[in-house]
Image (cartoon, rainbow, N blue to C red; front, side):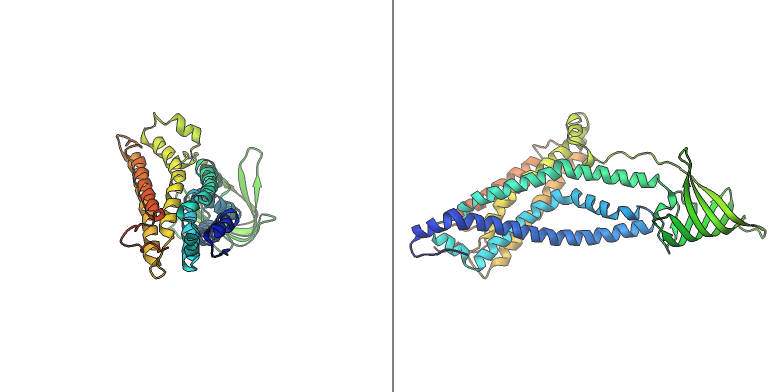
Length: 386
């Protein structure tokens, strides 16, 4: 990778214009992309299993699982991306140190401070991505996902039925079961339906069923070639009716649209209610800004703790870097929660931004120690002897 010659000046001429910045940016982007892909794959698998279970229970439409997965990923990308960039910088610097490339860089006269320029380019990319998700795409995904779930709850009761699975109706007073479903023709075969109304139980068994819609918006389930059994539980007398066609009206029971969650509010709405909506709007607005502010602080931490001089003591510094990340994010999350629950509406300056300031000062100090070849902490390795 490196173009190493005995003369440090010539080495600097070789490394400065071409190799170091491009190699650092390229490797960080590739590493962050790979790590993000792995994390998203695990996330998608876990969420897909949950959505499949909800679809089997008739809670969400089965044909909207992919869209819901995409929306769920968009919701959490503003939290995932800073962690991925932080880990990518750590992993790249750790590999450079393991392969003695950091030592060659120092020998050529380039200290950790020279990495600030390519790190600034990475920071710009991260700010654009995280800011876009934090201020626009994540709130949008929350609103769209909530609208899809609300529309489905007000949609046809039997639209979420899965073949071979008992599905309870929305009002809890009926159960559907079908042996086979043809989604293209909306035809149900070998249908079992149970319902309870006014103290009487009714069971319908039909060979086929289909949906029909009236002009006024009412919806019906038309069953063909079946039998209906109805009666009162505990009594011996039941009524048996055979039919060629039986129309079952599906109760609409429209559910009122729920309020949009706080994290789904648009930015102008947060700003309009910034001073009159207590600590909720204020905390959410500063929380969205915080997701961008953590990026430069995390990059400084990664540059400070990623360049370790001792090849045998890499894990302590890596664990300390991850511990700093989780402490940083957890403290900011606790500050936001305190702002939302506090009756006094805790000031962001005294709460959230104090934490940002403390961690930023620590990151600057650690980077200054690394740039001046001074020891960081007792848990990290000794400075590199140049």
